[in-house]
Length: 342
Image 1: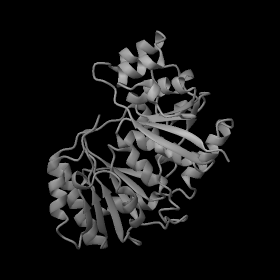
Image 2: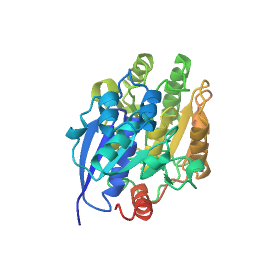
Image 3: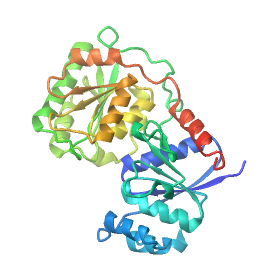
């Protein structure tokens, strides 16, 4: 079978390039892939509005790449398919596809740019389901539950069957989310309470967004090895620790500022509970996505205020984790939507 050459454009933000990596992982199930990654960073002096205007006025791929990203078009690696996620890669995706005469896939919402610029747009929002160039799915990611050793049938956890090991994925302020120090303290108290009531131990991981004050609180808690089995400080480890966590834990608690982390946990077939601060909101599309996950009983969401073991147990009992492998399902959808490509 012919090897497909794929160029993945990354803006360096895990929540974005993980989407593109998920599509690549699904395509790898259909044919051999030769993957090249290129970092692209839009110049501050070239805002999205200006880049879209240049595109609309017929600027050449060479000009779009040079002015917007400082990239020499003739130095792009050969590729049959361009994939990216994140708004700052959108124009680069279009320009690279034109320069290389390649097909292209964009992961996310395409706004103020005609969708005809893309071969396929992979979206997670139900409102796009009937659009001809869109494929609606769980947010893609590379997490393969079978490789991780996750069971196909997950037991129901709760007070009568408490998890032996839970994971807490800690985010931070982002977009419409703002956490208070008292809410971080409440989350620490919740972890301690679940351990005291159920005997559950914890894996705790921070992220690039976690404020230093919160990191300090969880680092202090982690000194008690009876409560915290392992503490992962993102400042020291960087990205790439989620597979290790997903292999070990029974359930996950994740702050809701990261839709990507919640999606990855769901795709790994792990019962997942999102927790949110008082000061938070969602854009309309994201609110629909959260409701989509709720309606399928893949997860539950709880406020950080008043969070305690009883509510946590009720949430876990209501969750029905995925049984299928999300990568297999995405691969099938891609083969149906793009038969000539795959």
